[in-house]
Length: 195
Image (cartoon, rainbow, N blue to C red; front, side, top):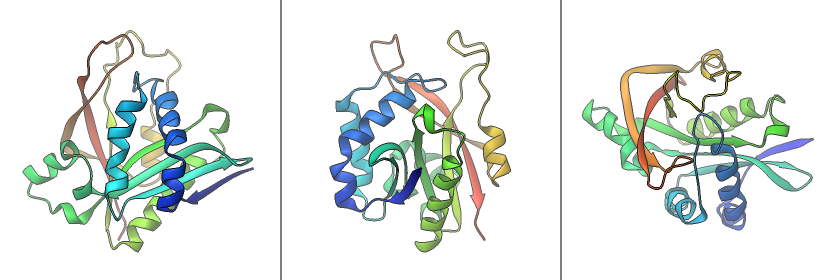
């Protein structure tokens, strides 16, 4: 039995290393190929601890954190994600940004991804937002590390009311497996209107 629940700020801080390890393990897989370390995680996750309106939920199995999801107002997140909206003259205060949704492989296929979307949408409504957005990495179809059995999550997102925002892309940097330095990766935005 997996319990999904929002974490208080104190709980999130207490689970900081667990959150970092989850991100490192899950994002090492396709399509992110993230060669993570705790230093990068500390810098990245500070985004959520710095925002008074950030939201973190955890998935717990037998008291162990096996998954997590994050969200925050777009204006509180990394500048790379806000820039396309600034350029399009969209009010950043209208958008609630979904960060990661990470879950260990043995717990997938049990509806936890749905719960992660639902709890963040509920939080967006609670904070008065009408639009939820997220960005997903775009990898070439012929990338040499693409698993032949990989199924993109596009269908999962569309079924739950999300759609790509035409023309909205950004770049975000991390170190891929096999790289010695961070490189920028293209990311495409998706959104859902909650009204």
